[in-house]
Image 1 (cartoon, rainbow, N blue to C red):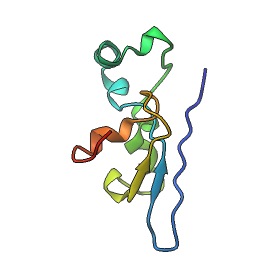
Image 2: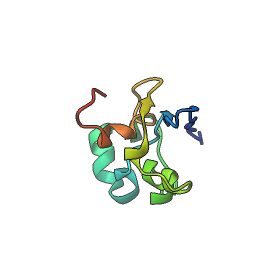
Image 3: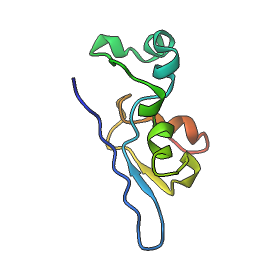
Length: 93
């Protein structure tokens, strides 16, 4: 099992930069549909993935929402790093 960590530094100007964003929240509610779309089962799987472990669930812990993010940096395009793409339709992901 591999844990995917994100990092959320805040600058002295209150910019919030998220590095890596985790799995798509759809895996918490409709695993089969997301797996069919993204092919996760071809190389691994999620065990016990819940809404609390999603991007919005983790941001909620310190009282944030995705709109509070100033910048999201994805180290690479694997499905375990790009959940933020759901929240940024105007941006290229």
